[in-house]
Amino acid sequence: MRYLPLALISSLLHAFVAWRLLPALGAWPTAQLALASTLALSAVLMPWGLLARRVRSRRWSDRLSWAGLGFMGLFSSLFVLTVARDVLLLPAHLVLALAPGAFDGQTLARWSQGSAAAVALAAAAITLIGLWNARRTAEVVAVDVPIHNLPPALHGFRIAQISDIHVGPTIKRGYLQSIVDAVNALDADLVAVTGDLVDGSVADLGHHVAPLSSLVSRHGTYFVTGNHEYYSGAHAWIAELRRLGVRVLMNEHVVLAHGDASLLVAGVTDYSAHHFDPSHRSDPQAALNEAPAHARIRVLLAHQPRSAAAAALAGFHLQLSGHTHGGQFLPWTWFVRFQQPFTAGLHRLKDLWVYTSRGTGYWGPPKRFGAPSEITHLRFVNAAA
Image 1 (tube, rainbow, N blue to C red):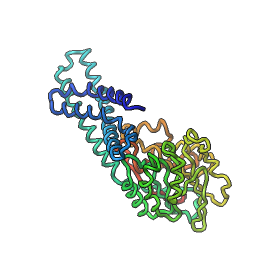
Image 2: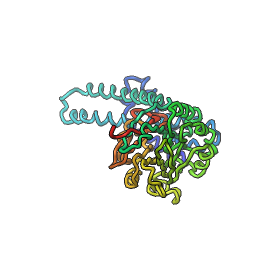
Image 3: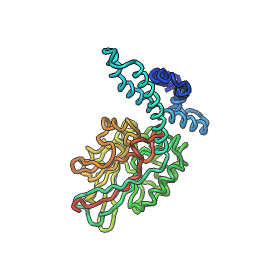
Image 4: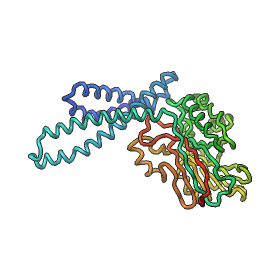
């Protein structure tokens, strides 16, 4: 999309917020000017959050991305809070229109003024807190997965899951390296990377993804594609990850010998992959082709939780997914459920456990609020214990 159409849409949305908030701040000229200036700058820069890759200079491209995506996060909160303010003030306007003597107009004016200031301050605070949450290294979330008839050798088997890092305009090598260091400190038996690792080409981001080669675990690192790999050149990324020593599972499985037990680990391509390459259609059943009977415990790596229905039918015990980011920041955390069966955490679907990570990085605005990032440390336990 071109800049001008995006700028027009951006300007109209910002004009709405200006129309609803700026008149109410008339008694505070400094605050009114500060908000007006912020909205004007945001309207101009926000489209560049989506278009900055077209700028040839990598330095300027990244700077424009930071500015545009930062303002996108701020404006998202401003817009939602402005609408919420209007909804809350509507009853007062109706009462005053139907019963003019119910309270004086000055009271309503004070409510309007105070709420407009509160919206601006709350949006700024949420954005700053969200920035800090997004840029810090994700915390480790420990999860026990109870499995019936778990072989004794697999009791305590540990998987470190990372997902949805989105190496790209605002996430670079240093950010990923801190994640790798945190994962290595867990001394896990296996590392699972459940898609949406990148937002950009191998040529642009290969250097920044290189730290994945230093991931350490007993049985190695396994990767499945997410939808963003297909936006970024999936075939090239699959080859690059294999070069880095990461095992990419494409509707296939491996059988791991752990003590005197066997564990089957399978992976499928992204749920939407067939839209980009028909040969990459996601198929949990195909991932079990020629699976040995002795590998009774079966784990599936699938980027989107929507794969769970097919995974349950195929007979998997655990599915590890991401994609949702847990909504990333309020209020979008409440809407993920309309697109995916699970938003975050451990859930049960028939005989299948599904764990959905909130993601280890972020996408778009550098902002997380109400949906913290995570490095998941899963441990198998016997369901009878």
